[in-house]
Length: 451
Ligand code: PEP
Ligand code: CO
Image 1: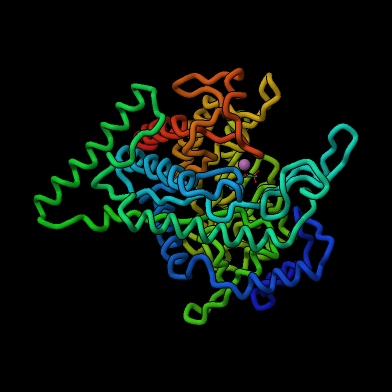
Image 2: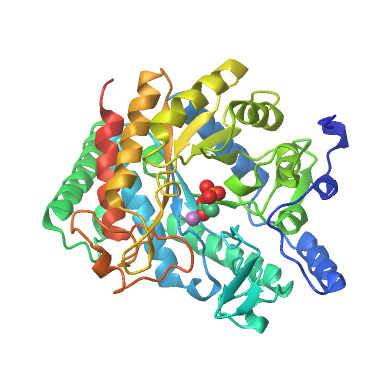
């Protein structure tokens, strides 16, 4: 029998379970030294921010808001730069503005940012031209170059990743607090390389109407609309590397609970959601709002047990189910998943990841995704939730604020032949800035439709 007695939980209790997707380190003592150093460092986030996010997600779960979760598939150390971070923040803020204006609901912004450095892989080893080396598992673990030195798991990278996560979030907080995100001046959030005329025009109209509405309200009331104009921003990453997550797990006496303070909202990836596995054991003991990726291979019973194991008290805002079935399978899989969760009597926040079920290989050999499939999956997700009397409360998107060419389609019709121009991802293909804004406009339209 499985021991789910919460008294037996502690931040290292996962170690008695099978932990999938963990790297192998050659020097366990060096690893232990790094983990104990990580455990002494101050946290990146604090418990009241985490609680604040949980309360907001509880409101989203009730249909009173929308979650926009997005960012790189994997952040990289080399790209921990001010310009890139600002662009990433900007595209998420602009998308949220479009969603807010279309849906007329608060939008909760959660970046795949400030700690998204560890990646699950389908195979432990990679072979190229007869040479076999450990797979690249993200900058938290090793480096992407195909050499024995680069692919060796290096414990020091855990510290470097922690520091970069802190630097990233520090800069994001400063930008947000310093007025970068002031909704009175959305015109400051210039449109960079958006060259598609209709898209530009539609965004500018949205921004103007929000600015005008705020001015109008404030001139009537004689007050600044603080609540509406203050933008909050939260961080999330896949809680994959369990020693890293464990090191930042703190007991907060005032709350009488444990929190993972390396991020606001960690999630369990699809490859590490085994019920008996180490990740589920670790996640059940932390009080953060958490996500779980849900794929077509998950049985109804598995899904139900995840929901009851990870949220036994049925606490609102605790659990976000991020479904990623693919445009092909969503019609088959989502209605059954909604019904299965309903039978547990528990409430969850449903979020659609239209990226990870729609990955394919282009004619030129690039890992890519088609904009039309991403949009189709989102469309179906809105429709199916509405048909089932459920609420689709969020979208989880891999995107970048830059002019990359990794996904095909969109208003400017990128083709397979365009992919080689600016393909930068080491892992999954992301929507570029223009495609991301376009998607936000299309989501806003759909989320606003009356059933
Ligand atoms: C990811 O979010 O980058 C990812 C690996 O997703 P999933 O666990 O859904 O495959
Ligand atoms: Co990905």
